[in-house]
Image 1 (cartoon, one colour):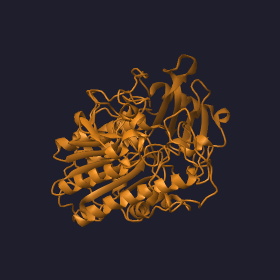
Image 2: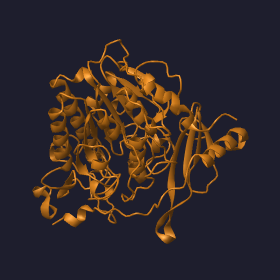
Image 3: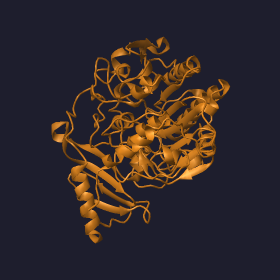
Image 4: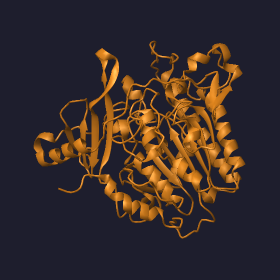
Length: 480
């Protein structure tokens, strides 16, 4: 039986990353180590962008990135919910080995976790993070300042991040008040302030290689957006209201208009970043990567109006394709093929070694991800990810806690995908080449493939740390 570990690929990835040459598609040589701008949307579905088939929501700036770069059709997030997916992205470990496997907001990266900004900072990059972190509160090993960021501005966890009119944000190790939001007022849209900080970072560091991580909260619930964006879509759709009274989310009677407006506002902010890089004369020396942390969230509500999952089965919080397949776009003029499309499967755990290789760096030994730099730069990819893996812990309702026993799991191996849709449920088997919608479970007719999948799932993970750590930073402590 062939090896079922992805770690066997690490040597080849490290060898590529260690090369001093900066990759080039067209033969254009980079004048210095490239800037990297990594933009991660929150809960943006695989079908929410025009370049992925969306017809009702305008996304001209992101669509332009795709037309001027490389668009991936089979790219995957690290998990089907926010914080675990970001842990995979930052460390290169898939969900079976990642430090953060829960979405409570309280789990932190460990002291010995090496992150992408740590690698880049050691290589002389200025590093800035702007938006939703999710991997460590203040006074934990995972706080951004201990994980490679020269500057961080935004939210530390999702208990705070999903309020767009918070009275405080976090700036490095302290609080940054937003006085116009004091007492429950809605005077300052947090994403606007966060974008301005990201733009300032890029402008201040344009003379040296910089890494700008922009994990915006849009278009995650709560579904609130300023009038200058909302006006474009108000009254445009037959509406369905949004109300979740047991949560902190504000009611939204025009859910569809608000969601569309948030996606278009996200697109506007992407355009502002791209334009600033151009004005600073850094367009030819900057790699942009755009993606989303998991699949479509509107499907949780039974909402399919925008076809946010791009016709795929499932949504955020499950491990069918609609919950984990994500948009992925890369653009670097003269280096990334222009107007190209790739169907090579890869996931968030491959991002660290890929971007490390782009900067001429070696990835840490022993991680699960491999460098996809050859694909990114239009070369032959000698080694592709043999296995992709995801999991999500089991919620024990009667005890109000998460359990690490028999998690929800999924794996992809070539065209084959196995899904354990619920903890302890029988494994389902799909051939994605023939059945993109995962509508025909082939488990009964393919016992040998099913057994191979079962063996991989059993070996792919180590036990998780405590899954029930509560966050220490709640925005509602600072309402007044």
